Amino acid sequence: KQLEKKLAEARAKLAEAGDKDRAAAEAEVKRLERRIETHLPGLEQLVAMAKAGRKLRLPLLDREIPLILDEWAKPELGSGCVKITPA
Image (cartoon, rainbow, N blue to C red; front, top):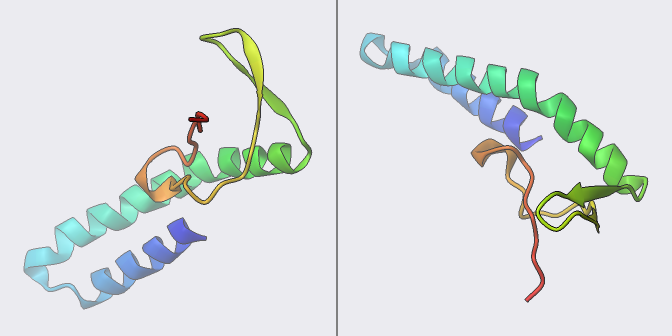
């Protein structure tokens, strides 16, 4: 939902952009649209897997770790996934 919110904000900026800022605003809208198209289906799949209690294999240690939903994952800043390591 945050990606969609950012896209709506970018589209609003594009609608108000003057000639000087139009190219940058269009590029931002296209970037967010591509991110939603490429990342959102995978993120939705990860959410479903986490809700189902699935685990992932950590290749560095060759062991399973739980897949957990967490607010620290920020799809607008990257993949939307984060590895949480206990202290």
